[in-house]
Length: 342
Length: 119
Image 1 (tube, rainbow over the protein chains, first blue to last red):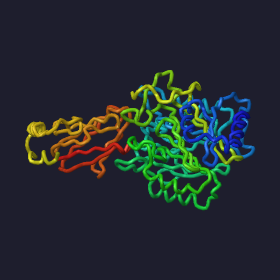
Image 2 (tube, rainbow over the protein chains, first blue to last red):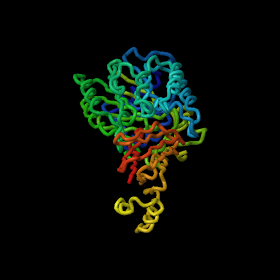
Image 3 (cartoon, rainbow over the protein chains, first blue to last red):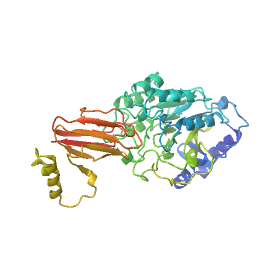
Image 4 (cartoon, each protein chain N blue to C red):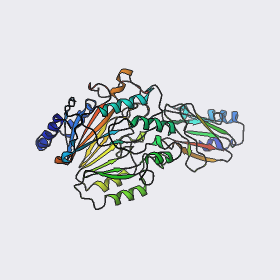
């Protein structure tokens, strides 16, 4: 972690009680998501300030001396997609990897929140693996998206990425006192519904969380958003309420999702929800187009609507700082996208 | 709709179409909402099966074509038929040999639903 970023975050932690951005200000800040914001979340109170990405004078420095660590969320690589919205999704994934590798602090691991492939083809998974081989992080955690379950109910996904997981690929792990839970809400979807976790997974989740101290920071990650962003487009999970009830007692809960190919955030009590940009193509904001799906933007703007998410855990504040940054230049994105569905 | 078509069951397709046109009380806002036996085709576009309800005679073959830029599937909710994943321009066909109402959806995007009425 650079000194500058650490200073900003320390400042925010001290400031929290006096200078919290209220909900309206929080939402206004959302329009600037493309510039790379430092979000400090502690006890559910968000504080943000634009984060100038400085060069890495601490390049390669391991931030773990006091238990702090960071990881990166990438999502929706859709390897195999080749339509006008992005004719070369492998190239933009490579840009994302290069960006991760250029970060001043090496992330402990990567979390990929699903839609690894476009059509669940073996060649697509192979290409993804090839690109990911070059990332600096030593470990990558996955959850599947609906595009990864297209040919065989996710058998292939499980074989490649599901070692040690249960059911359709759910699991949990711990990192320096933070408990991570990978959920699958893209299996056995019912007609007319949205995402779905299912009984078996919910029972497992309840059991997995039982007995853990309420001061354990929790990170849930799943492909489809675990809160309802836009029901008409299926952007939500039918039975997520039950899952969220299981984490209600914890002091810090962060939910990381993908699927919608744009950044959306929400804070509810001690739970902060965040969706990531895709590394492949953007999608329209809810209700602004006939349907969801790939959205074409001018070629020189593509890399500004694709991105990665850097998440830092700070032991001192028991909080997670989330920084979204676009693949391309850090000029602020206009709120709302002018171009239409291709 | 079913009631109007019920009494002409068994007649040739052109007659069915004529009866539907004559019996239409008010102009339909979205002509694609209701299909007749002559159109044994469903086009998938913008996350919609069009027409959403398709009526065909027993023995008809229905062909789904994906015109969307995203892959979709056609899966019967009662396990009667199930397509492979259809990428853009790919098709799936099924021949309905028994009368009935067949609800289906896209297993990838389950908000997308449709119905084939076979009679």
